[in-house]
Image (tube, rainbow, N blue to C red; front, side, top):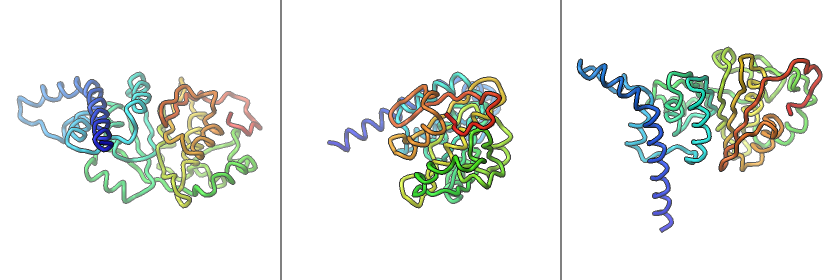
Length: 272
């Protein structure tokens, strides 16, 4: 009986996600069909990413990891900002969905496992996914949090990412595409953080905060953090993303809207 209820719940989530993906992609799909159908040239490779997402979830038992309520929190922001620059830490069963919810925007996935990137791109080669090296381990999270302020290159007033080898929390060796673009929305749902030897999300959270505070374009940066029921995610979010900037909390997802840093922050050590 329990399994039956779980199946019903999963089915309901899939249907609901499929419905609003359908709304987003309907117009683009109709345009594609009308322009190509008469010449008999329509194919899967020419289908917009929203259509591929619907086709994928309609023919698969695999559904996105986040709940419908959690997805909706991000969807509402993407619906307002899209097309936008959307950076996602993690590559998984929901990647097609996220790409489909940012039509005509730039969506980039950062994934720790080269093998997993290869696996996912076999079925979805049109996704933009890069491998990320991490220098942290989850077992060291508490010590890192206690000592990072002693390192000037980790402090709020001086923190930077590219080439910052002195700060363990800085993702200093990412593809240039990450550093050269300002990101409107950042989703932190990786790397792995459930065993001591895993990288944990400490560096991803810190780096998202640095990107948001370094923003030069008008507007704030929306940062979504998943799995906040875990102590490391919660502690690092409160330290770097700041409770005062939290504008939403649904299930295991926190939503922050972070403004660019104000001028004259010289000497400031705290992000909050």
